[in-house]
Length: 292
Image 1 (tube, rainbow, N blue to C red):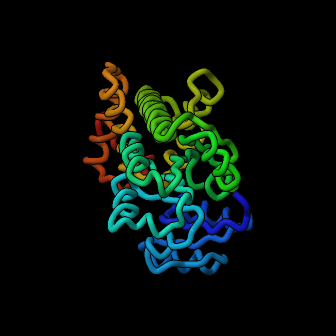
Image 2 (spheres, one colour):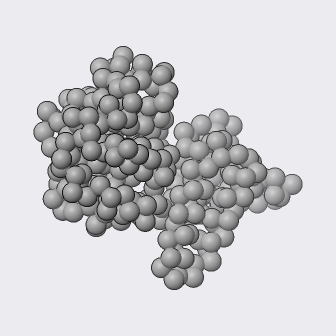
């Protein structure tokens, strides 16, 4: 896809905004839409164009990027009133939200014949979104994936083609299951060490020098949890949703995976207890309460 492509970017939140800005830095023409007027103003100040609605953003755009809370919202934006038909025929839809793979395949079937679809969720958090170094997992035909690669490359350091439409979102859910399970282990380890009289920071340092190291111990425990900032930029409710998506996928495939089921149950309960809007690193508070 050439730099002359017109890109509609729908969803300018904590992740979407830096991703859209990286597309601008790469020389793409970006028109954005978000319900937040502050986000629209911020995009305009950095050289982007803004639209009055999602429909207006899609009109005439060669590429549509959706970065929204879930697949149901994506379907509402694209399908209500056949809004997706405002884009030119054969425009490319990059569905980068954290959606359920079954929803993604359903959406692709409904827009096929007019839009080419690649699901391309990301991992890495706000910091890597700003840096343009996200990991990205994509699902779609080989031809559509190749067409999308230059655009995806402006936002990502590592791009993986996982297979047909839906496999990107399946892989994202699987990844967040492993991430969420790692968070449970890391937090419980720190709380266990503290109860026995070990220094929490020292527990983390030793884990990071030993076989117990994981993403939570490396980039979350000191930075957001023990520091008390709890500001990773990813909501607890979204993490719970992604892990439940993985659990639902497992069930639909007839698998029995108790570790996944228990992880999903714990994160769901944490979201109910603390509220889904809090940062997902607040999961520490949830487990700490369980032990008090």
